[in-house]
Image (cartoon, rainbow, N blue to C red; front, side):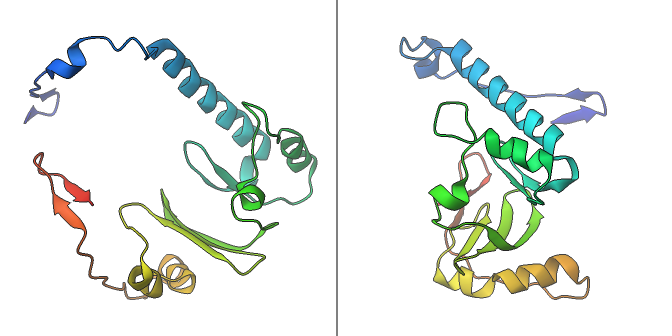
Amino acid sequence: MILDENIVLTEYKEKEEYSKPNPSVNVYIALFTTAHARLKLYELLDILQERVLYMDTDSCIYNDDGSEACKKVENMMGSKLGDLTDEIVSKHNANHIKQFISAGPKDYSMKLDTEKLVSCCKGFRLNAEVEEKITLDKKIKIVTDENEKYETVKYDNIKIGKDHQLKNS
């Protein structure tokens, strides 16, 4: 509950299952891993600068213009722990992205050189009906044309949880 602009009242209950430390969990390693991943991402962003089209906590999509910066990033790729991986090659069996659009965080679509379409839209399981309505071309129009009408998609998998938050089941 917000009491005023500087004070928020919150309540919480401690769950018994979380009160005892789990011997197989090392919080310090988890903290280090997360912090180190952020530093690697910041290093990548610093190298690529304005070439970055999209980034998330664990990914970066950028325009490879053949510059020294892009060659430096290419040298950072590998298969060892801490190396960057090219998921376009390893996960999607393609060489490059032909078309890319992002409508916001965790909401993007791309067409690969193999003509395969890859989409991500947080909160939606991309089934056939949704993919038919939220196409790459439709997303491009929504992002680039202020007069474009939004498509309504009937989606039955959204439920309200005990905490009164929307859940995607």
